[in-house]
Image (cartoon, rainbow, N blue to C red):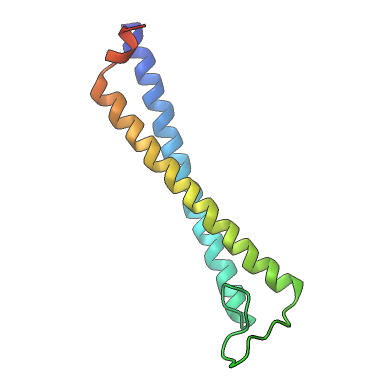
Length: 106
């Protein structure tokens, strides 16, 4: 019975991790959208290059490039959280299907 309780605790922790990651992704996506809107307002695309020009206008301010860099950072963090969600889902599925079988071997 101890194995079952331990298994449930791991499942609960994993489900909490899953919920936390989903919430982080929502916040990161909102931040990304806000930064992209800001870049569009100042006439930059996400790569930090002025749009609507035949030549690439590299005369952008440091703040503009920081915004573009921040968007890339947010994208990376969203990818990480998405991988955490996949892993957490797999772990919950595995733990639920094993029913504590692996714990009894110890």
